[in-house]
Length: 83
View 1 (cartoon, rainbow, N blue to C red):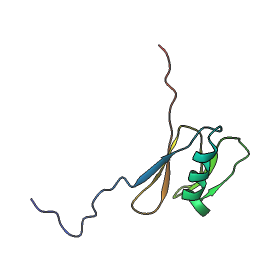
View 2: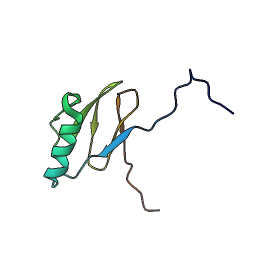
View 3: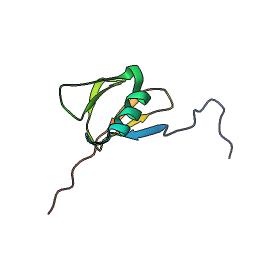
View 4: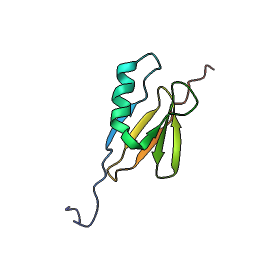
């Protein structure tokens, strides 16, 4: 079965995880990768990322995904709860 040339192929794009506040090397890499799409919020150890839906806060452990369309997305990490 062949794909129609008008269909866009799904691509996960690239992703970086927000580092801990104690990782300056990781933060330098994240700021360089985000460029003008990022700003520093009042909250320490977090970053605001410009997404298609406006600015979203990403905290350590969250993933920032760059889709094939060129838009950033924030994938939240939910803490595991003990039962």
